[in-house]
Image 1 (cartoon, rainbow, N blue to C red):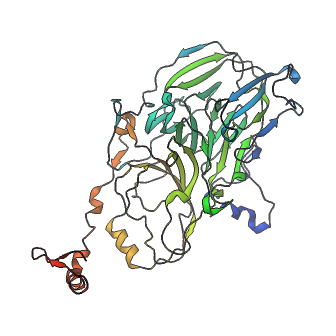
Image 2 (cartoon, rainbow, N blue to C red; image 1 turned 135 degrees about the vertical axis):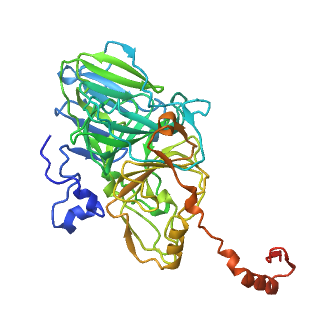
Image 3 (cartoon, rainbow, N blue to C red; image 1 turned 120 degrees about the horizontal axis):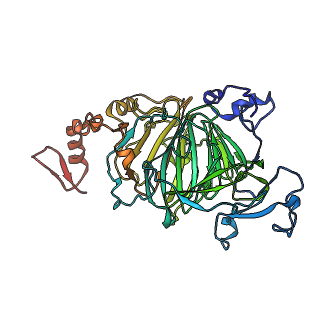
Length: 497
């Protein structure tokens, strides 16, 4: 790894990635200066990469003999007959195929992970109560890597049905040494919160820092090292779908997360004749296979079923420039479709620095009961609209159709003063895992000492302002509406025109 050339915290201070270009006075650059790797740009493309030029066969995928005696291996992420627009596969040219292993053995269950979120499972809990968790502690005992440090918070469905979602935390203090991981259940969207991740994949390396995300798709092997020491972050896992960009509708061709800002690794292989453990997650269970060589021996590859990363500071926020707030779907970075074409299985939304200029508009989140389940986290900075206990590394959960909004003090202040043009969420990025499905909460999260509930008393001061206008209302109704009947019991008029 090359030496860091800049403080990674610099990127927390910028309003948007465009500031790094200094209005064109410095050469533009696509990745953070302390990122040691090179990447290919684009989302959903058919990429190709060679660590040794001239390796990939041209005009065919599987020749009788591949250069250098390499083996051809195809990895698919969709059915063979999936429509071309949704057909996902990659061809890998490697020193040894993945089939060269010594068989599978069961591993002990991780008691803090969960995959069955059906309410009949006694290890999950369902509740309409608004829940939250203080930041979970990174373990101090030695030897906790990315895999053993997985903790599940909530989810819906079950992976063998290929329809569902799980939300996890990872808390690790040790590199994965001669160990790789394969999620055979679904795709991982990984959100580092503390400490960078140096991720080796079969397609090449990804360096992912707080403020960036990456997606490792189903069946792809990877290893996680911790260049900054102990690390913590969030994971959104989806079953039966892949992450895609949301449609832009009337926005047109550009905006939100632009395709060119997604980065895919370049091929980088290693030939190491050592004992390696490959850990598989299948149906929520963990298994292990052992082999006598590195799983990261891919010399070249091409395809569109690839891991990728994205820098959240490049997100192009849109919003109202007249009145009222637009629905939070404008903050969607990635989405995963469900079998209901009108409701996503999962959305990944961010709340990052942006201008708020709407006039005559109630600025805090309006009181609402929306159909989506919402699980929020904070990567860094401070996020308005949550309590002081919502700190980086925290989790906040609100069930679908449960009412929420700010306390009366915030309501009164926002209603009384005209909102100025202002920058909001400066130096902060919060995110939301959102789903059309109701979540159940795992035993681990339910019984955690970090758990607390949103205090319902915060809404006790939401006074009845309407009743103070009783006389004015009676006069309006008596003079302006036919067929009015005035109730003597409460002094209010009622009736119909």
